[in-house]
Length: 74
Image 1 (tube, rainbow, N blue to C red):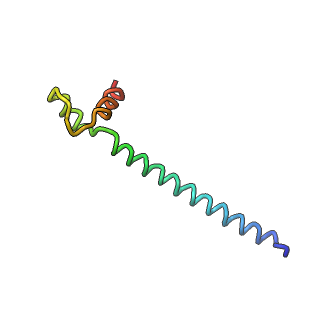
Image 2: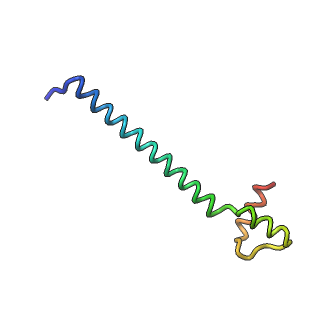
Image 3: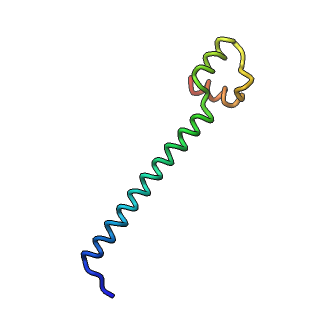
């Protein structure tokens, strides 16, 4: 069954639109994952100041995160 040029163009336009929507969804997902990772593994600024002011490590902050925070600040 032969399809007309207009039908092919319509189908291609649908595919391109779907690809654009999919790319936008993946970009949103990427930003959401990045925000979650930042929230999970980055020390909040007020906690860093409180620990430094006290002169001791905060027991609620894992040592790896504290070490990573120091490396990032340096």
